[in-house]
Amino acid sequence: MNRINQLFQNTTGKILSVYFCAGAPTLDNTAGVIRSLAAHGISMIEIGVPFSDPLADGPVIQNAATKALRNGMNVKLLFRQLHNIRQEVDIPLILMGYLNPILAYGFEAFCQSCVEVGVDGMIIPDLPFKDYIEIYKPVADRYGLRIIMLITPETSDERIRFIDDNTDGFIYMVSSAATTGAQQSFDEAKQAYFRRIEAMRLRNPRLIGFGISNRQTLESAQQNAAGAIIGSKFVTLLDELGDPDQAIEELFRALEN
Image (tube, rainbow, N blue to C red):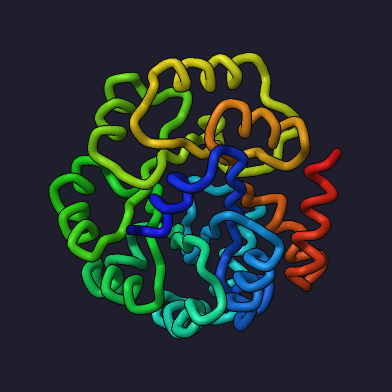
């Protein structure tokens, strides 16, 4: 069974997934960050593939991607860095990146490399859903990989149902239509969105991301979905502190306040 499906099957709520950008703040820290996150009990890890034009990301992750590219990170190097990671961690690993670098590598080659290093799925924010259904899903399915789709408050019920019927693993529930970035709280409009999706009784579990940075936003995500995804807050701490163990410990402190 795919590790993503296994996680949701074996865990009843309060899943915590953490994102970081491979190659930032230093080029060779990818495996070390993964080891630290896993050792501190993180449920799942999203490894960012840096791209020069990350449209869905806010300034924090954009800056991390820029730093990673300047450091020399690319898809081929990332797979080399992940080569032995399954000897050390067993939690689900997801690559999150934009379509351009993946196509430059070759989509089937990308899927094959994912399987070789033990990656379980991918998030491609700019992948059109029609292309996903017609071109990419059959290839990913052949390799046992999950392509995770995003929904936002503006996504129609009809499209959400279509996504739910044609994906597996989980649905990435974006808290707002804005780019990534920390928020202090989720307002009533976001809470109404969470309630609307909950009432749909979707087949796939959901994780809420974008803006999780403190206890209030974390608890709201945990109450309205299977758990939360944290990106910008951890990326900021990792950049400031340099050490992944210190960064995750500081993140836990922030989530308590």
